[in-house]
Amino acid sequence: MPVPLSQIWTVASYVVKQKLRRRKRYPLVLMLEPLFRCNLSCAGCGKIQYPGHILRRQLTAEQCFNAVEECGAPIVSIPGGEPLMHPEMPAIVRGLIERRKYIYLCTNALLLKEKIEKGDYTPSKYLSFSVHMDGPKDEHDFAVCREGTFEQAVEAIRLAVKKGFRVTTNTTLFEGADPDKVRGFFDEMMDLDVEGMMLSPGYSYDKAPDQSGFLGRQRTQELFSRILTQPKKRWRFNHSPLFLRFLQGEIEYHCSPWGNPTYNIFGWQKPCYLLQEGYAESFQQLMESTDWDRYGHTKNEKCRDCMVHSGYEATAVDDTFSGPAGLWRTVKSTFSL
Amino acid sequence: MIEDVPEGSLESWRPHIDSPGARDDVLRLAFDYRGDVTLTLKNGAILDGFVSNLRPDAEPPFIEVFAADDEGAAPPRRIPWDDVAAVAFTGRDMADGRSWEAWVAKWEKEHGTKRF
Image 1 (cartoon, rainbow over the protein chains, first blue to last red):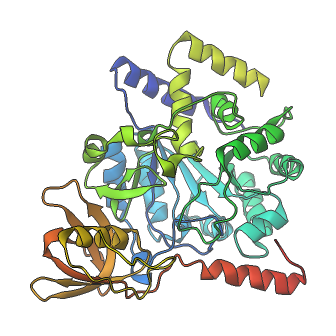
Image 2: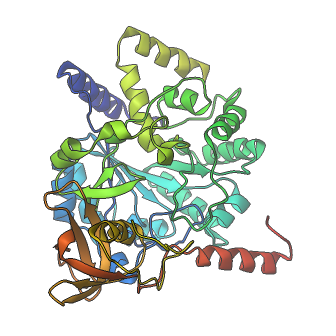
């Protein structure tokens, strides 16, 4: 099952509208983090290391809806923490569907089977479960620091696909990833009949428990080149084809941190999903008070090795709609992948 | 500038603040810290909590703090930098990496082999 045409049309018409309005910086995907609580403590994650009283806090459904409307992005990604631990998550998802937002609910899937069986969620073209799968079984279980999680996630994916939900996988790759094993992992995921796969090199969070596994820029390009060389026809990626070429070092892009603005219990995060340099009170204040020129891999040490999709996918999509050359690059890349 | 910043975790650190510059540095470190701190304000009030925001660009600059004893939906308390007299890093540093070390040790013991 491919990405619905309605989603492609919604995103394309949204970006074209921004271009016609000559809006230089616009949001594409809202990263809505309703809580930091999680039922895993993964080696490469720097998102959840907070005192207990912070982990017990969460955004209300109303706060989520206000953020979504304030931001206006056509896609809402819900990471965390583990969103399925939020007691109001079914109501949040329903509210976003009513607002015709395309939702990627990012989950480690440990609670997914239970929530689906309970009837908390209904299949919709607007809702995708984006399941965190960090590679083949051994690599995944080690990266998320718990044995048995890969099998649990696979079982939940099977059930979700069978029930008619849209399901994608979300894979973060770290130093030491074996390209052949990753290619085998892609086959395994496609065998589960997921809609597509998302890939990203791990961002070097300075708060992550394991500081040894992050990839430098050149290593990222080498690794992704080896993984994506002569891709199999059956592999489907939930990315702009230009972003995949960027990961392989074939295109040079600059980060669009405003493309995936982040809202969480602290406010609107400055400047992006990964760096925490203060919080704005409103989306407008975020856009107006952030000195965007300070960020990017050539300008800021903290951005030097970053090639993650929350920074560069928006750039790739913007490139597609930059004119006939961008469209042609996208068409060529689509058929060469 | 603040001196004698500990290498590694700041847990248990009680910096000596003797100038506005030193205070500003300590507040930046407190915002980056992933544990609670104890703030002493110039009016004598003491607040335990998590520094969730730092806005040097605001007029006047402020921090926001979620008090450790506010368990509900209470908003953070906004405190101008000028009101802060002392900061102590009293809460556990949740980003100290101990969970990762424990997991690697457990995995290696169970599998009878070194992972790295």
